[in-house]
Image (cartoon, rainbow, N blue to C red; front, side, top):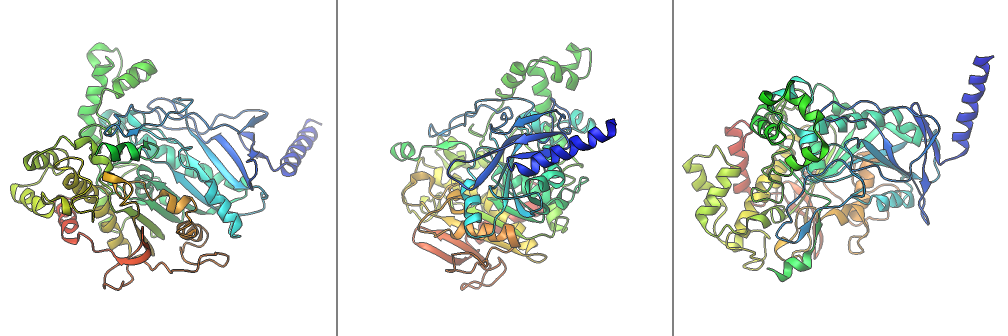
Length: 565
């Protein structure tokens, strides 16, 4: 009799979920979403995909009974306090912060059923592995556009742990298998999607992974071969600025105030984070001589307030050293088995279609904290101390030649002597952008284009209105995620085409028929690799050969030093 009752209850529960499109039942609980007023979008917010305890690997979510409302975003993961960039960039503020923060959001067309199998776009937020949250980027316009063009998709945005809580270095973390916890969180989210997204009407075998900035770097690293086969969990990659070490989406930039005032490639090894780990332990009074147990156990027991106070004593992405981060991913021989430079060179990554975008002035935002560099000697010392640690005197001389003390050759590029925020600002910004983003992106596309379909784009919009920032890092977001009249949905349609068919060009229902986006290794008019270039004057196909000698130097430097910058 009990078995009969259980069977009837299961049938009724399944029927309730099928009858109500706002209810989705998963093995660990049932969630009620909501329909966005005046739209065709149904949303599920704050759905837990895992459970996170301090300095422990993520575990599956805790089961619950009944129906849980999925109408509010989940708590943000703990954030590092950020120094305002030149007084013009401020960190985001979230209503709730928690160490147990592993949740995701699902956006879906209002009219779907579990029998549908729509392609899925998974989004990883940026923020320099220091700040950020799954709610940062408004992806509703992308979903609305997918419905309008009869190529509907599902969109999923995920949280992951940040700062020391997500990316602590040192041998202690490696020994306990908790290195790169933020990446482990992302992998768990992708596995959740593989297992559960069909309940929302998504196709687990048609997932495209994308991200901005640190999310782009995460995407790039998850394509590499590792012990968790993370690159088997998605079939395409969309990287909005492939960064080497960082990024910063989610911060608010006040352009007008600034105007008035004037790839993933190399990571440090887990062991190189030892000194920062030891310093962290000392700051919270968990040294082995003062604790009756190991230092990680002590770190797990101390108060959250003490942990965050210690994290905030370290330099942050807005500090003088900029993107030379303390808390970030490491090569651990596990989640990141080897330096990305080696993996890319050896072809040890997913052979899947990729889209990689870049902005022309990637380094400006990260150079605002260095405007007090006023001489050439100070510039050279800054570069070698923070980035080109292994450079010889001859290599530094060559670097100085390629990035001269001439504002007309600095960033923002193509602006002459304008937009000089400091004597060495444009020079520093030119180096930072090429070193961090542009040269790694070109290295990846040069190698990947020989094995798979890849497309590249360049944003040069905003040169005349953004002052010293120019076409700055993250400034191309509107191209892909909002409708700008001048572009006629060109970027958004290309992304939707890619999510649906792994090809960014014209889809059967697309309204945009103005331009075909060639693959990166297609020959442009200049006889070089091709970029879809967005400028204030319009959209065109240009050659990916800008600053070739300088980027060849940076990439050759990495080759010589086995991927190390």
